[in-house]
Image (cartoon, rainbow, N blue to C red):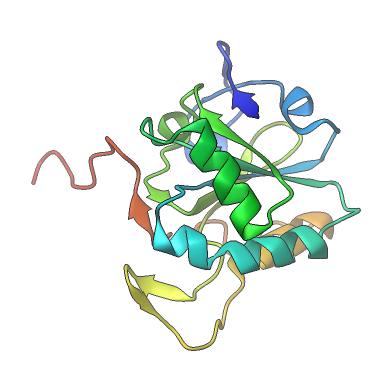
Length: 184
């Protein structure tokens, strides 16, 4: 089982105005990807479960490309057994592990699933949803119209800026994240 750990903050994530614990993603992923996709997941979140087909398809579509997918489980209550069961049940090949380095907090992730695409300098080039299937918790379209993560990765691989670098993720809230403005 993969354990995501780090102690050194990285100042390079300026596009989201935050810093991330800079765990050596080469060590985490086992290769030197140019584009790293951190996918925040929760094993009991129905939207994460329902997005597993899309994640498997993305793994297939970008196999052989310099892209590495990493499943990050930010909720403290998630167990190693739940992560292993989730991976096996939904047939995902990506590395997965608990967020012991607090990546979700550092990146400002609020939902599962929520994705962050990092370039080789660990700068965030895309943040948001996998696609537009869900437009509110428990409410989904019969057909996906926008495959946002797919489009972002294709832009990256073509050397273009991501056309829409931020989208609104829809899913289950990450444990302990305040979802309202403290001024409210």
